[in-house]
Image (cartoon, rainbow, N blue to C red; front, side, top):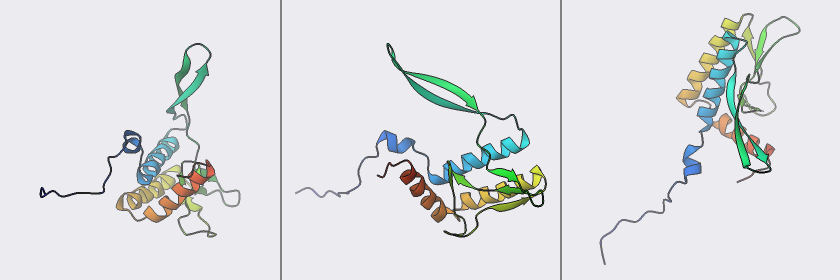
Length: 145
């Protein structure tokens, strides 16, 4: 018999190769939030598909502002911030613990906090909470793999 090495690794599907990692999803979201803090008129281009009677599905590009992850506190006027994986909040401290971050009074303070979090995400320090948020988001869409 031939001297061959075998592997149980399967070929990655194109649809799997195109998917973003949880790190990349959150980093893209953080970048959108930074741009939104710098420029309140910032928009992101999204693709929407609609069913047409004659032509089948049609593709449309729509520019919309990203959903903000920050808001002003009613008590003291500080900016509060919540990190999200899509629409699902990331539980940075664990389940049942507060995950809202006090970012400071000015937009520049919130940008600094977002940059700190982006550095931690790039370093892999938040991989576990991001994976939990990904699973939670998947269950939310009722698409359990």
